[in-house]
Image (cartoon, rainbow, N blue to C red; front, side, top):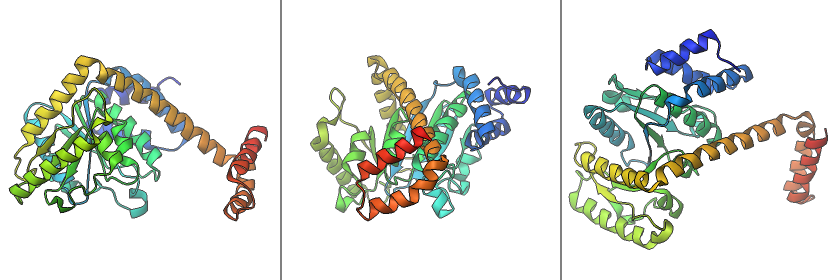
Amino acid sequence: MSLSAEDVALAEGVRRSERRALAKAITLLESTRRDDRSRADALLNSLLSSTGKSRRLGISGVPGAGKSTFIEALGLYLIEHGHRVAVLAVDPSSSLSGGSILGDKTRMERLSAQPAAFIRPSPSSGTLGGVAEKTREAMLVCEAAGFDIVIVETVGVGQSETTVAGMTDLFVLLQLPNAGDELQAIKRGVMEVADVIVVNKADLDAAAATRARATIAGALRTFARHRRGENQPPVVQLSALKGDGIADFWVAVGQIIDERQASGEFEKRRRGQALSWMWDNVRARLLADFHAHPAIRAALPGILQDVSEARVAPSAAARALLERFEHS
């Protein structure tokens, strides 16, 4: 599908970093209407040559770890040093709770007031896959608009950490300094995708933060060898509230990205992510078509009941459904 005159103007507005055009383009991407989806695909293709030049950071952490304060402090620091910062969210719970982790911009009031910042709440798609798809596309639009730092925040629900790690260049995990449960929230799967660990709120108890940092570093050594050929992820101690340690954190990020670019790993990761996004969309579309198929809609309630009551084996039920889908 070629771009209409209206969408050509929209793409030009995005490239000029017009805030209204940026918001309008992302709203188009989030639409579930089939005609809007075709327009969105054409718009993305037209912007693609202007994307890929940013650093993409994923950020997660335990409740109360200070993600919003950290993102605001980091964003303000980066803007002060000449960067333009977009903040997006992956929150699959937002459609259930009626809210979003970025729904209230007053949580980042100073950052949201900056002309060089753009903050977008999580799309209320409901499923992690749906939210992730829209966030990936929004990320590309932000890059086309000239934002050279894109931060993706997640609440850490279910598989959201690994999903966000799979769409960013570097994944940051925030921890609290009072790690009496030292490994609070250090789930093995999350540790395996974390590139930097941040012990935030060091201003509350510097000694506790230092102990937590040492404990986490020790835990990382036990998980160690999850990424052969790469150094152990650094553990950075800071106070986002006071702005202490933000510069050291950004130096650590820069060193990791520089090393990956020099080794070719950075570009390899980006290419792999693009292919993964494509297959994710293929799977999502096939599943949506499957559920929308009249023969499936008619048969599904009875088959679900048969499986749940152990009258039909799950594998046999799956094959029966697929045969209906293929031959109806």
